[in-house]
Image (tube, rainbow, N blue to C red; front, side, top):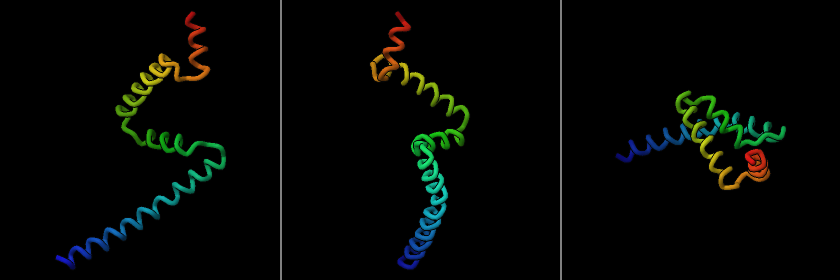
Length: 89
């Protein structure tokens, strides 16, 4: 059992190294984008959405629309909520 566990651990360790190496280009892209003034968090989310199933993405957007409405109702959108209140009057 020890030799098998050792072999599995070594194989897994090699895969972890490969994964880390594969992440480096993405880190470089995010660093360049950040230097250009873009939010890495926003870019990561947009990239995930590009790869997302269209139905799942549509549900995400519907949920975000509801969240935006709730934020507005709660006055959590500075400046914007005042603009909407004035428009509603």
